[in-house]
Image 1 (cartoon, helix red, strand yellow):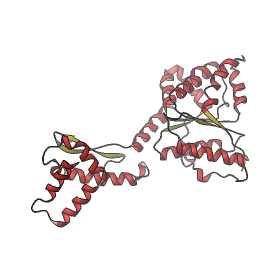
Image 2 (image 1 turned 180 degrees about the horizontal axis):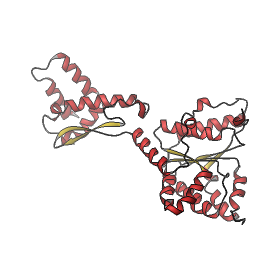
Image 3 (image 1 turned 135 degrees about the vertical axis):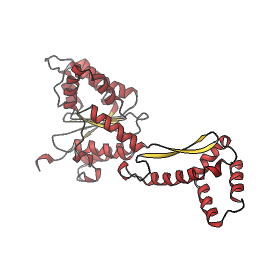
Image 4 (image 1 turned 90 degrees about the vertical axis):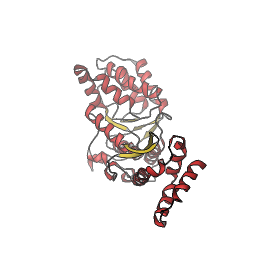
Length: 313
């Protein structure tokens, strides 16, 4: 670091350097990000590069502070909305460019998925879902446990490192989908991409995609998303193809890559296994159902969501 500090000190002691400008520059070079970048790239910079790159350094510091304060893409105040600054060296001189920020990347990826997979939830109700709005009685340990575990998962999961997800089950209208949407919105605050899919509609969509040749494209989008939320699993009409070549393929990939999946269902584990064992043609395939369940049971925590039916109030 000494060569860079010597260079900065020499520059600031040059004749004609007024006190106010000197104080401003001192604050600039005391910035941890500026100091670290200069240290990392000191061998690449030519003599006088710091003086000539002052404007880039000032803009980088200012834009970085704005990024630190940013809470969402909508609140971005940078010159290029949804972009963050990056310093780089070109021909021995300091340069700066703007690259898409995590919020922008997540927004663009979500738009692509929304255009590809029509069975995603995009309603205004679920876009605003929050754990703060979920009501539960502290005396009801079952529902409270489900909410707390879901909140913990949303705040602590690390896709690619931890593949464990959740299996939320309970009666109709108790708020399982709302909890899943709250998980999705909390993940968004952490810049973790996710997809909330309504399973019955998704399986119908996959069947229809055979005709237009988009099965593989949609399958790839769903199986690779960092966190996948499959809503209302078990409400669909099951077929061997959907179970083995769609659901089974998705879950196998996600288990291998340690990508967590959150399920909601009216069935518990055993009831879901029964459902998966019967195909549309009336046959019974217990072994294949067990194979799918081996991609669900060990990879999730089973949580019962109790409560009244909120759709009728």
